[in-house]
Length: 425
Image 1: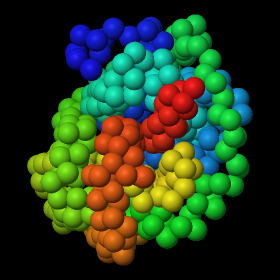
Image 2: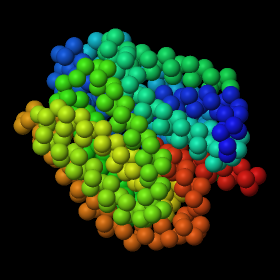
Image 3: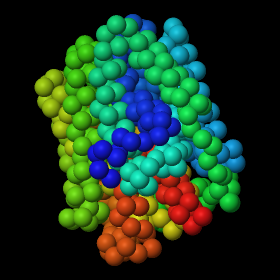
């Protein structure tokens, strides 16, 4: 798809793509205001870290049910429900006057986000002109723009008030909700609804469980860095926004371009070994030199390279090795990995309370290296899947796997299956 035709899309596509940008903004939106929340609400960093924990743990559990819900009420209804929940709970978080209230409302926000991200790419695929490849380009653009812009917008609004980022998301998602209701057409439901316990049963497969545990351990280090790196930097909201903006730019670029190149050049397993080890080293450096502001800033920004590669290749690897349907595999994987992301900030807070700020980063680095060790036990199925992918075999074409590269949260598998259904019809 050329750039001219890329932007000649139905209004429904741009409505959902805009919502995707705002959704992905949420990944780094709160980072610039974490120290401000701690100061202005008289909360410890440990208490503030629960913003990540409540959000990610609810997202993790909800991932088990999003396929079941979407297959019964339809993609558009699921999308609207998710957007409405985000609007309500983001606004309530902005209105809250206590850290406990914000933590609770972030949990509701996580439920809405899980419902939204489970169906957003599928709706774009159904509505876009140019087929699956064009939809992936749009989704990748939304992902990159959202991840990069989130911290910067969070910093700009956070400089006005710590409530600003929450109200900003509520307003933007309300606009996206209105556009989705009026512009997006209903999509056909799948012929066979997704069984409720299918994701849990899928974890009986060793290859899928191995990738899930690897991602859990990686996310432990990743969200430890996101949740606690802002404190030793001792920067104001806008300065933190620019630091994580640079981090987000690198993450988005290497997620979309660097990871596929490495996969083709070296294979999935060797690329992941290198990227995970590099990320562990950067997190360890933050732990060792926590008192050196510029070391922390440099390592955080540089970690965007490794994080982008890791996020994409671990997600892709799940689809390469999973012996079950893509939506089921994605839900099972999302459940396991977000458990790690949710527990890490909480555990890090306890470590800081009992020891010091160095400890959670050192533990996070160790967790990532343990993830590398776990991954080595699955090198054979990954090598076999790489070979089959190169030959265009049962694991799908390069275009189909590009869908997994574009998606970090579970929308791509449903979108791929929808595209195949549409082609058969």
